[in-house]
Image (cartoon, rainbow, N blue to C red; front, side, top):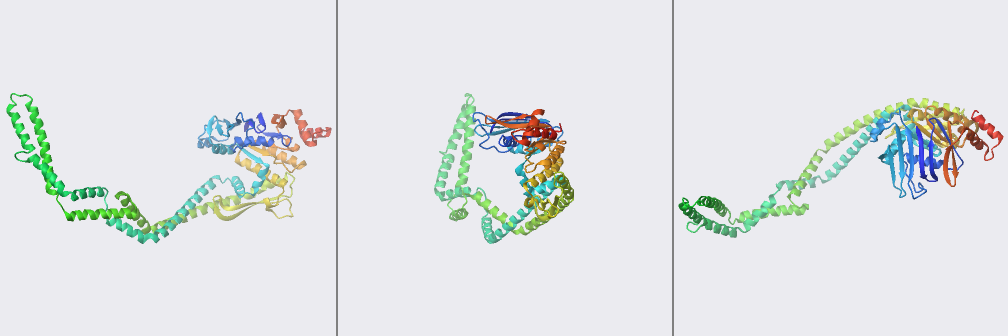
Length: 546
């Protein structure tokens, strides 16, 4: 239940604080006093978007705070799913800065507005007068019958199956369209893939070929340089290696008397080994490198082929050509196996259709089964609010499957026995819509197990004994849950366990609880207007059973 509501700097509200009763709370006041503003503040607390009229004083923030007692409602799992710390005494706070920035908190933990809206749906159901129009909403009618039928788990299973069916159909369509596109391009793809495959491309090949080409094109000058190096190292008389050997022998002759000779001999020997290896390498390359016109032509031809493929396919290197070849090959494989893939996708669609249809039938049966008792309950309530001849039926008709099932649900209504029931949105008056919605909300609230329901002038268009009967129904509902009722009806107002008056003072909206005597005067005023008569006071006391 909503224990306490605090509103600061919201529209015409400077500051107000309300402590609600656990049963039926009545809110009355003159038109324009600020009752709708109070509802706007509550909606803001439950995740509604703010607008430019939210803040009256731009020097400070707007704050709306609600304290809720949610013990025993089983909301622990809902809090867990929203990643919000659970407390049976939960405080929700919404702040809007002068710049328009909005922040929301649950038990001082920052939350997103979407989370706040989802949490609010577990705590309060706000029904305002304009919501009578939702009777024309197919989604509302389906939601209502599913709530009564207890179809929550079945509907979730159906939606999962329906979503899988939609995905399977989408996959099949994509495969079919892709197969058609690929079939049109198959010859071209096959030619391109074969051309790239026959090229036998290898990563790193271009760099190797370009290096070999430079060597072949300069074979004469390279051979001349290698020959010169080899002779300078290994010439029998003047070569470097001959000189090193002689130096090594000279040091050995004085090694006995020259201690450093041994280290110098080792260093000369190490140098000689390295130079001998260089000499062997140059001698080998000298024999290998020679002008080879045939090989030069082959390298040039190979590079020309690679360059041509790069230009043709607009690729930067062999790696991109190989990736393109593999992609073409994969596309060809898809084409070759498209019939198999399409057949598998068709099988998947068929399986999903069977599963979806089976669950849709179960939903349909459950809705049909729940409809008579639901309709009967609505009629019983209507007969208690001066609609003795009213008829209310629920028509569940098969239709093309949607995310909500394979049914359309219509509420058929007639206020008179002589008139055949027709869709309620086409035949009912404003007062009749209000009473039907009261009946629906009364039944739905019991099944949804909401802790609080708010009626905002649901009794519009009715008066007298009918209004008294509506008040009785609301009072009975308040025996099992908290009800907050904004009303202009004295008959309904008299049923409350706590009565609040909304009034305007110095262009500011305020609210205060009424004492027993003040309540008699307020109801008398609702009966007779600004001039309170003795008859009105007597009638007020009668309504209050005083």
